[in-house]
Image 1 (cartoon, helix red, strand yellow):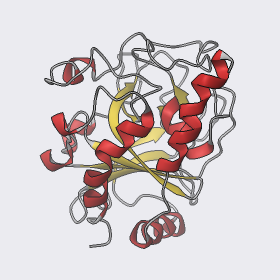
Image 2 (cartoon, one colour):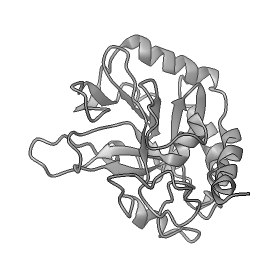
Image 3 (cartoon, rainbow, N blue to C red):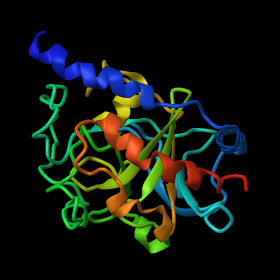
Image 4 (spheres, helix red, strand yellow):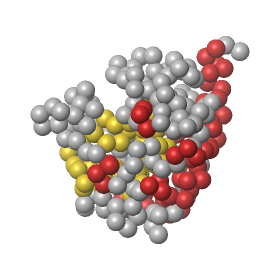
Length: 254
């Protein structure tokens, strides 16, 4: 077996970790789209693409009090897209799909947190740890920022991603900086892209709007050392946060 094929095999196997969308989550997804836009934005003015003049996207707090969630929503029923994040420690399972990335960072925003666990690792691996890029930082004049921690989310907490008619769990693992041309939302590790769209997903994949990213507030959303941070692949890591994810989504519509 060639090297690339052997590296892609675990990615294909990992796709079994994707699951059907539970009815309460599907109902919530449909209601968000039907509502059209966020009524109580925690911060608005974000873009989901580089070459776009649509800055209607917001971190939505419509259900932060009753469900304990923060999610991304645009105007006119739009949800976010999925850009690929290759930041972090790529020393394991790197199959070459990130080789042409132009703005890869050697560390994620959560490096200090994951390395502090007894079963932690030096940093998150975008091919192993299913993580979502959530929150925006920066010092440029007029740059719009948002810190989910100001609204109750905790680093490395479990998140839910509804994509391609599937439900995927991830952890809040990185933030968007001000190294781009506009403050953007809608990004996840390449492992989440693989679980959503298959092993052919890469930096050049065109993933349109329609993805719902949901963050959960509170200490109970953090898997801590119960997560398998030393997992060999995203299949193992996804399995280690699935039970907590299943518990957290029970909040939605409850």
